[in-house]
Length: 513
Ligand code: ME8
Image (cartoon, rainbow, N blue to C red; front, top):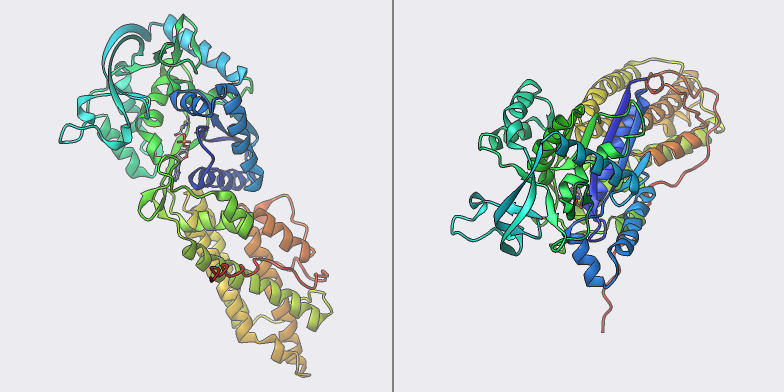
């Protein structure tokens, strides 16, 4: 079995999870489920980033020790996963001993090899971004961009990692492997960034300034810079699982691509003599009215509210259908409702209702065998073959939004087939030809429904399961076999009804005085 190791970014625990965090988990889960059903041996890791200034400050604000603060907020992040039906195999916290041990071992190894040195640093520091700034980071008017929050000038001794030494190697690596970063235009941006000379990376923080971190193994007066610590989670989580490293893909947001994932991380691995990951998938941002949704801006939506109102699968479906991986999307409730009503309730929900109702009404609830193959039937089968043959490569190329659009077209056409055949009219006729056509249409709609929900099962796993159950269908182990138009349901007894995607309650009217 080919092994496939996929990770999400690990979330800072300085606030509650929001829609952006939920999206990244769902996207990674959709890829993981897709690969599992393709027969890969998948290992899926997610987790939380618990060290650093921001977490220390948030704990202080709450007046509790940082570990207690992390325990509370991490539990909230972990609890989100089952609500989103995330199929992760592991969940890592950077305060766990298994992680700290590996971080310290890697630091010691790099120190012993001479890849880390001590030097005096004088310059500007952003606490919000936990990074040292350079003159080129200033706005044209000389001020510091908002993003950096409060910027202070400091002088201190620190440990530095020899990033500069690996710059030429990294450029060469990225040039040789043009598909390392998805989407491809982001890889070009990384190469642009690498046209400027790199500075060595300051990877320590003196304990007087930051206590909440992993102590440097060779100098107790310092803790490790949060990014150096955090990036290593991908490796530390599987250090005891032979054959798992390297990761096949890291899924992250575009804000943490350059420099952490596209520059620091490959260089850290190369310096430590570890294999590089297969690739990085950098998704875009969920926005609200043009601004990035984030904890600090205060415009973040709580994903649990939408899951509670519409159900897990509708939420997953919307995120994957709406966003073109790599680009940004504005989140609006109106757009959510449009897709919910037209694609899930009308297209899919109607096909389910019609199939169950008509099979019950005209065939005693047992799916008949198809008897005729007229042009209408052949056209729908041909559309199915095209849909499946396009859908799979689209998913392999992370074009899930277009893949789902193709699945929706197939559902729309299946509903159109039913309209044209009008089984309710055929049911009134005693002509044997009409009766044969009726049986064919019932067989066709049931088969089309079975196929469509098998196709999208990595996006809507629970819905697919529910529909298979009412169709009396037990899917086989090989996904590809499930996608072949056959007569899989002939003679099967179906349920009478299934409520899926109910109409949302209208918003409560404001109380009048
Ligand atoms: O960056 N839309 O943590 P984080 C889409 N701890 N994705 C978003 C988003 C939005 N509006 N806002 C955030 C960190 N994200 C570090 C990562 S990895 C070794 C360390 C994504 O909690 C963001 O791009 O700020 C990132 O991939 C993830 O959520 C965690 O963000």
